[in-house]
Amino acid sequence: EADIYQTPRYLVIGTGKKITLECSQTMGHDKMYWYQQDPGMELHLIHYSYGVNSTEKGDLSSESTVSRIRTEHFPLTLESARPSHTSQYLCASSENIPSGRFSYNEQFFGPGTRLTVL
Amino acid sequence: KNQVEQSPQSLIILEGKNCTLQCNYTVSPFSNLRWYKQDTGRGPVSLTIMTFSENTKSNGRYTATLDADTKQSSLHITASQLSDSASYICVVTDRGSTLGRLYFGRGTQLTVWP
Image 1: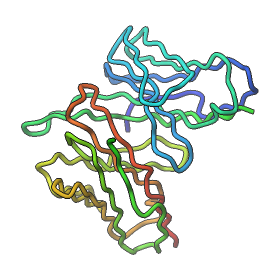
Image 2: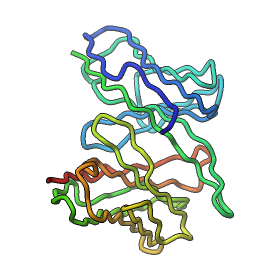
Image 3: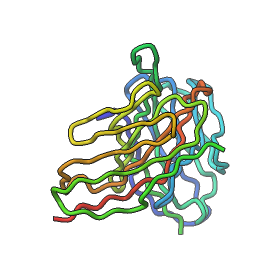
């Protein structure tokens, strides 16, 4: 079981509220990621980080922002939530795994936060 | 455009039966292909990972195959159990990205009935 945690697991809030989704990992991984997933759809990368003080936008445009002040912590913030932000948000961290002559980037996912904006 | 397509979209089988899930991809240059299991309301958990030099890998009752020439993979589940009910996601990594960018399929929703 991966040591990556997300809180809250479920969140129902009203439009216009500011929210922060927490993600923390105890594996010392430098790379961390945020994905957005709607029911029956693929995961879309919305933010990633190579390490402390590094944050980048992902493939899917998102109005959320992230910060990476500490290695183990990668929170995601929505300044003003809207119903279109209703989705599941998954956090992940990764490490390089040697495999024969190659190595690959193994991602470990948190349990997700199910966000509903009314 | 890099894509990962999975079939079927959903599948219902009886407990104890076998099933095979399919994945076709166009991601290039190819690095590796993984199969993840995602229980409802949870994050994905890795089942198998294969590089282009591997054509089969097993993890208990799960056996994945890879044909890098035709860019196809399958996940075979043997003697299914009720706990196998989940979404199975095919994920392909490209070799050109230092990030290790993952391209996700939409998953096959498997339901195992008693």
